[in-house]
Amino acid sequence: MEHIMSEKICKYLLSINVISQELFDIYIYGMELLLSFIINTVIILLIGIVSGKILPTLIFLILFVAVRRFTGGFHANTYLKCKIITVGTYIAVLCLSSLYYPPTVIKMLCYLAGILLIALFGPIENPNKPLDDNEKKLYKILSLIVFFILALLSLVFENYVSSLCNTAFYTMSAIIALMIISILKKETLKNEKTC
Picture 1 (tube, rainbow, N blue to C red):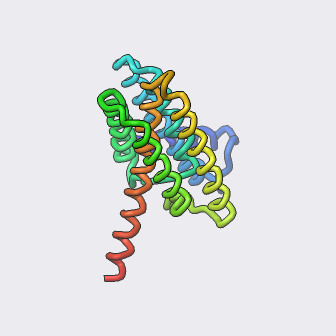
Picture 2: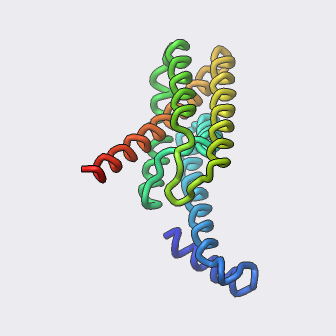
């Protein structure tokens, strides 16, 4: 669906000389990513509105986009799988954050584990968008800073807005889980190639 819509939009932009023929395929890919992001966001916002969880939904979206922008993580190989994983992650975060409030010490340990994981393995590259060495260094630094600040804010404000801080904790835990899945997937593929 994203590809067909992107092609139509880019053909129109080409016909009115907004984009060039030489970069047509790149514009289609960029438009696919933009449409996929918009569709995922709209689905999540609709679920948040219907479930009456607008503020936790906004917390999830802001943190998920802000942190994953720099850390990277698991990337599905189709837009449908991406929607299922993203929306599934959102639903899991909403359910867990409503059901269980881990003790502060557990949250602190999880945040420290996340920082360690980012320091050792971050950023996790998207296979379709490799990073050069300078970008890798910059993204590692930015992901550590963003993750640390958000973790700290979540812990500091836990006594005042505990439900939102719990949503933040589970969102950041989900991001770390997606990083771990990506790392394990790469290791599995590497081991299969050497066998």
